[in-house]
Structure formats: C-alpha cells, structure tokens
Image (cartoon, rainbow, N blue to C red; front, top):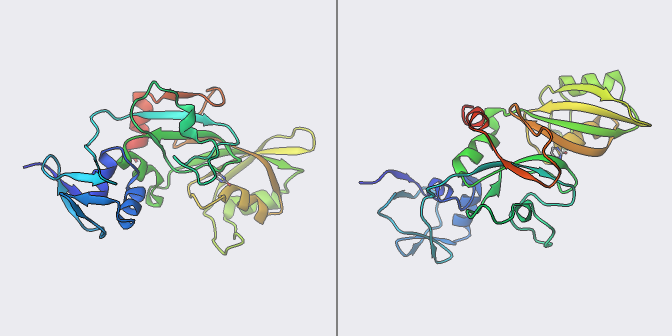
Amino acid sequence: MGEIVRLQKYIAMCGEASRRAAEQLIEEGKVSVNGEKVTSQGIKVEIGADKVTISGRQIEPCKKLYYIMLNKPVGYVSTVKDQFSRPAVTDLLGDEIKARLFPVGRLDYDTEGLILMTNDGDFSYKITHPKHNVEKTYIAVLKGGITIGGLNRLRNGVRLSDGFVTSPARAEIIDTPKGMTAVKITIHEGKNRQVRRMFEAVGSKVAELKRISINGVELGNLPLGRWRYLTAHEISKLKNL
Ligand code: URA
C-alpha cells in the first residue's frame, strides 16, 4: 500500500501548486480523484493507487525537486499567471528547467530582489507559513529622511492603516544618498505591501524596495533578472525551520 496523504499535499508533491493554491484548485472544482470531482478539502489519496487529475490532466508526484533563487526586477509579477498578462518571474527561467516552478510567496510588481522558486509545494508551504516566523530582510530607499522616533516605532511595532500591529522589526540606516535614506529592515511577517505600509505609518515614503535575504539565504551579487540553483547548505537552512 502506498503512503496516504491529503489531496492538497498530493497536488503540492506533484509540483503543480503550493498547498494553498491547491486548496483553491479543489474549491474551484478542477480536481478529480478516480474520475470523481472533489470539492471538499478533507479528502485523502493513496500515492501510486489513486488517479488524480486537474482539469482532466493526470498528475504524478515529482521525482526531481528544484530549488532556485531569482533576482526579480521591478515590472514583473511574482505569480505564475497574471490577469493583465504582465511579465512574470517564470518568464525569466529560460528552458533549462523542464519542471514547472512557482514562486515561494510574493514580491510586489514594483519591488525587486530575492525570490525563491521551487516545485516542492511542502517547502513553499513551510517558508510562507506565519508560524515559522521566517525573517526577510529588505533595503528600503526613502524619499527624504526618517526620524529616530520613526525608526524606533518600526523597531517596537507599528499600527498599519488597517489596524494590524506589526511585530518588532530590526531597522537601521545604512546610507544617505542625495535627499534619500536607505534603511535595512528585517521583518518576519508577510502582510500585503507590509514594508511600504510600515514606512507609511511612520510618515516616510518608500521610493525603492529590494529584498536581500530570506532566513539568512542571501541574494548576494546575483545579477538582476538572473537565477541560480540554491546550494545544499541553503536548502537545508530553509528546510530546517
Ligand atoms: N513589503 C512590501 O511592501 N512589498 C514587498 O514586495 C514585500 C514586502
């Protein structure tokens, strides 16, 4: 008998989507098991015995798992598909990798920097799950300056416009180019446009935003728009959360 797993985990193991996106596919009625459409989330399947299809196409657990990092330029969406047909990070992968990779979490269209991509849905699920408090570091270039009071509010936790209070962040000024201020900030939450909104809450405007590390895995000098495989050491750093 094969291993029995929840359907959304099986879909993730097949490299089709993250677990969360798999739940959506189920909700949308696109998934069938042994020819029967499934719409509830509790279903389990036996690997190697049950036949799972998405929109009629049979899927199988991936044999080869990929883990890469990419330096996303501004002007690319970090989803696989975009409703406005804007360029997507997947367009930057070229044809060396035959598997379908998806981005781990999101970076805004107007943010650049480190994004991880994989076909390992469990890996993606773990890194993006709030309970793991994965640290992400950004360089935010502000128009104008920031006060010590503002920095301290970011460090202590700040109330955003929607009422959410952020956890304490690490924040320090690292440069003051002409009329601008570069701040290095580390957070472990992932609310929509969180870094921009944190600065907004303390009266600063972010002109440029770049992510430079995730859980100690650094973007380094990877050129903009390029990707590379993660090292075994980096993969284990991200898996052992
Ligand atoms: N915070 C933001 O404001 N934007 C991002 O893309 C990531 C974090």
